[in-house]
Image (cartoon, rainbow, N blue to C red):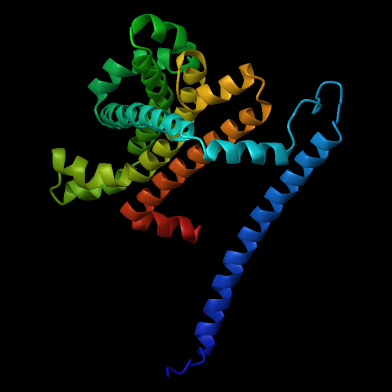
Length: 279
């Protein structure tokens, strides 16, 4: 039989500190979610009508729960999820490669800035959803056009954050590396790229969020499968609880994919995580 040894005083204090850090934020988050759920239930059961805002036709949480359970039991859910995840993976993957490469080149080499930045500055203010009509004309396949829209939505957050990260590399760090004989591609790979990596990771997380927004817009217009299409189909069939179920799936997938990116970034850059924790 194994005896349970009491914790030493420093260990007890450390354990109590961990409990306080975990309990505080999680309690606040759960209370916040519960308050939103209660407010939603109250507004829909009372059919609150404020003139400019009405909950008369908004389904209550219980109706949404029943609709979500029916969708979970349907094979259509996996079909919709599979198509949406494929489009997100393709569009975001290409945007990450192109955005990081362009951001590094523009931030590092003046000739690349002079050549590439002017057209990108013209294209940058155009919202990704504004590309939908042109994408339908440019690509004969609706599948490719939806991937192009997700690519467009993710590209500029990734590119601009990468560019900011390269421009923010400390000049003293570069001077120190040069004084030690580090130059050319070695300077880029060993100093510039690691120093700008946190900003690149931030851009990837932001780009993932905009990627979901653009995908849902594209699927609503030209998709035949996907979570965005399911949400719009629910509206056209007057399946009002299904609209909120689709929205919740989109929110959950967007939150989960962004959290996955942040977790991978923290694992790849432990020094960045330590800096975040100390601030």
